[in-house]
Length: 249
Image 1: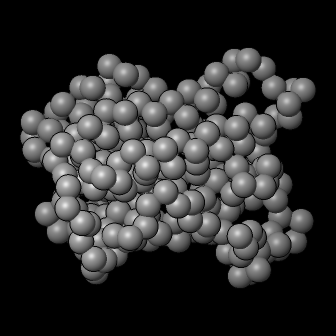
Image 2: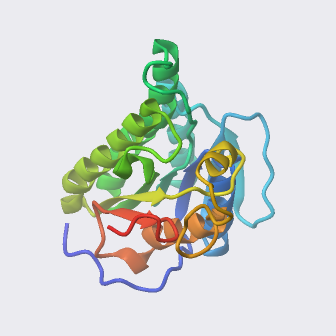
């Protein structure tokens, strides 16, 4: 490929984006942000139905842990839209159990959803993006992977740490094909999944966040939009901290 274009405004007009974990707090906010920026968004999650108050959004039920469902989803999107410009990986689950309390079953579940739920779609989308001449992949990591946990257990920390490393590999392998790969590492965000985390991480009213509040889904969604857009055309292989100042790295 030639040189990647110089960074430009954060618009996604005419692009096709896939979002996993779209029924959750961050996933839903991301779908809306990408759609408002002009993208056609295929919103996916494991629930049977989900609705979105946005323009060009289509919902598809999809289990990120299934290779068969991954192939079927991607094949359908390629036939209908011809290309995939952005892949955002928001599907995830969490555990708070300590190492000694954790079970093999828990480890399998956490790793299957949080790690293989990234590996499966990335493995399928990467060659598509490389063939078409580029694309942007953004995965949700976590501040937990950088500091050894906030209130999450070791299985979650291990899975998110693996995601951070995986995406750096993808960034290196994809650079010559115009495929960007980055990670957003949120601090505690007020979503249903993170409700118990914010409770555990909040000995003070602001949870010891220098900016004085917990994150909201929109805080993360706008950072994802930036990394999916031409505004980030010289950023790849990075882990972007979006945490209100809890970690200043």
